[in-house]
Amino acid sequence: MNFVWLLLLALAVVAAIFKGTMGAVSDAAFSSANTAVQLALGLVGGMTLFLGLMRVAQDAGLVQVLARALRPVLKWLFPGVPKEHPALGSIALNMGANMLGLGDAATPMGLKAMQDLQELNPDKDTATDAMCMFMALHSSSIQLIPVIVISLRAAAGSKNPAEIIIPTLLGTLCAAVVAVLASKLFSRLPQYRRNAAAAVKKNV
Image: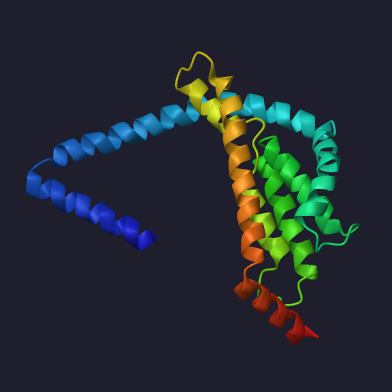
């Protein structure tokens, strides 16, 4: 990826030299850098406010409440995970944190969930259905409070930056449904079933 960025930069400079627009390129580069700094500074206030509120919610136990509410759903999503296995708790906490926009809290919880799922994996080199389902859910997480988007809209001068909440909720809900259905569908395809059976047999 570093090579790709370097190649794009080199091509842009060469094109600017041949077209005689090197001055415009330099002006655009400095202007973009200035805009980036202004945007970052504008985000600091909004992010501080919302992440502070989310941290209060986390310390108050709201994430744990969401996690308990999600457990019945997780039993259906992860039928191969034993009922009392710690993986379900880690997954529930990860999903609860993601729903509240607590990315800093969701990441370590997600890593812990994957470690717990790996303990149940008969073939350590191949992801299980539960692992694939968890990755699909983590990537398409339902967002109750899109903190970053709200902060971006506030920094851009939006009169009502929080109006994005309902559309975001509906959009991420649709994405999560599609991700779950896709994961369930692919896990039932003959090729994947054969691979799973072969992995179990190899480790018996």
